[in-house]
Length: 401
Image 1: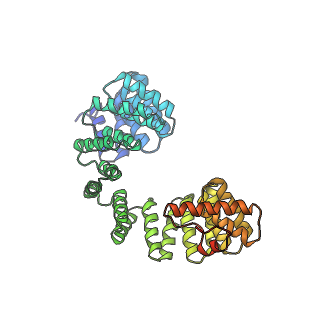
Image 2: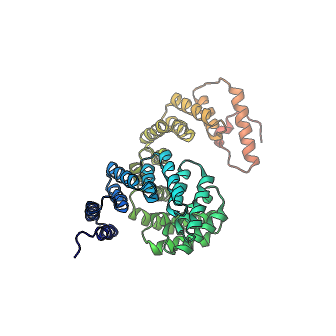
Image 3: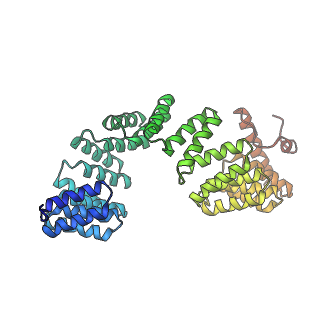
């Protein structure tokens, strides 16, 4: 009826955006701008559409044009800040968010996002202040409560975290992540039954939430309800291909059950997700070793220490694998490296002594025997199983305990 009604084109663009029809939305924005090139909302919205399609330079140009037309248009400054935050330029993002909230002090979204930038910069108190200002501007802002709670949780202020997560849920009863995160905080606070209720509420809203499924599995694992734990881990694995924790935990269960091949398959999938996961390499190596596949264990340990040279456990396990396969000198070198990284490592000290004895290397013999004797006495006093093997101890010149 009125093809030159630019506001109608702009509103139609918004409707298309809500439906996810980004190309049609962009065309409507462009049509609105043909009719009124000074329509700052259309420039800013077109920038958002360009950004959503990965067209960063085009989005940047749209936001700049909106600001050129109206330097006091806070939304464009905020959108420009978001663009720089996504590409990792936190200083520019901070600069533009500050401009946005200066122009519009009641701009809750800009306060929230400024807080996110501060958090990414490690400036947590400043982030807290921003989230609180967001809540002053919008008291029912669930996301601000959620972000505030996350900082309190990371600082181990569990009561404050639980309170803020609960406030987030009161503001938005369908805030899935708040249920899951509050469950974690409740579990850490020792309120396990309440944590279970939170994880279950999360799953009512999103039945395939992988973190909630994994978190429930962890609780049942701690309760030694292995079958139930495994069912939750399997459910988590079935709904995501990028989460390693349920795979790691399921591997532990398989290993305990003697299902070494299944455990190895789980660790291999973890390494597909993250080839640099040194812990998974060590765990797979341990499983290979228990399975009698020592050569493959050695390769995993070598890869682990290549990725993380300061990982004492990987050096120690590599040493034990070398020792078991008859490579005594290599074992000695790896045991010594493990002790350089972690001097208080009783198992390694005892294993190094035994390996040195097997190759008749008696340098520092008396010192090492005294050290091992001290370890044994300390562990017995603490009711711990001694690190030295009983038949090895019989052969050592150690006074009766």
